[in-house]
Length: 72
Image 1 (cartoon, helix red, strand yellow):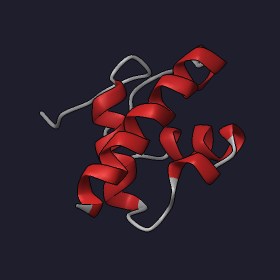
Image 2 (cartoon, one colour; image 1 turned 180 degrees about the horizontal axis):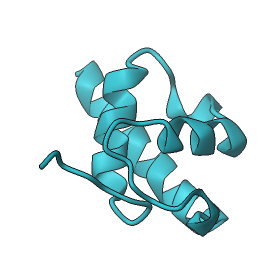
Image 3 (cartoon, helix red, strand yellow; image 1 turned 180 degrees about the vertical axis):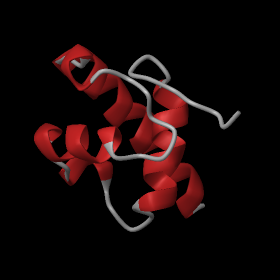
C-alpha cells in the first residue's frame, strides 16, 4: 500500500512540495495555491475541507525549512 498523508503530516507535505516544486520559494506562494497543490499531491488523502490557516502556515514553514535545507 502506498504511503498516504493528510493535513497533519507537515513534514511529508513539505518534502512532497519541495520535490514537486524545487525552484519555488514557499514564502511566495499564496495559501489558495498551496492548498490546491497539496490536495493534488500523490499520496495526499486528506479532506480538502479540513485545512485551516494554522495548518497551512505550519506546512509553509516546514516547506520553507526543507527548501532551504536543499539549497545548502
